[in-house]
Image (cartoon, rainbow, N blue to C red):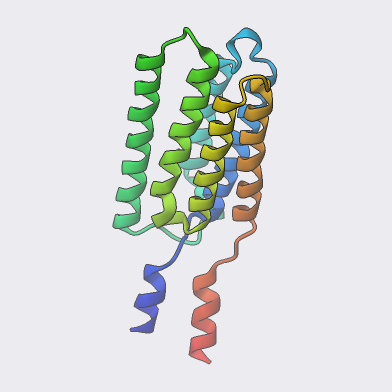
Amino acid sequence: MVKDKIKGAEFNTQRTCGLWLVYIGLIIIISAIIGGELLIQPFLIGFGFFIGYFVIFVFPYVNQKLSYGKNSKFQDRMDNIAVFLNIILCTLCGLVIGSGNLRLLWLCIFIAVGIHFFGFYFSQGKIMLLLAALTIFNSLLGLFLISVPFLLFAVIDGVIKIGFGIKMLMQRQVHSEKLSKISL
């Protein structure tokens, strides 16, 4: 009975998600540094996202090495909803804003990504709520502080993701520690 309650609260893939955040944070920073007039180099961020997604999430080796088990069906469903929401929000940003104001476009995309982090609360824990809040806040600052170069907000966004990613990579499996204490 106790095992079932603890198992339901597991965040088995936190370390995998942490690696993703470190990776995508680096891609964002590099894309922003070489972005020039585009602010974020779209080819680099798109290609980087694609390669990283497959290496970290699709090919089984990395996920098997870092995760402590599989997510529940509910957690997978919430992750899928969060990803779908992100696709919809980013697409809407592109359709509504277009390429006329690239600063506004990229900052709104960063906000959309921040919003989608809320959905990962169920599979990654409370840490995702703080990540969502900080990335959204950073992007909102970028919208209001027009005189501050976009590059600063892009680098801060990447650094926030890298910091949270490192924290998540360092997570230990809480489940087995609690079970061993209960078993004694």
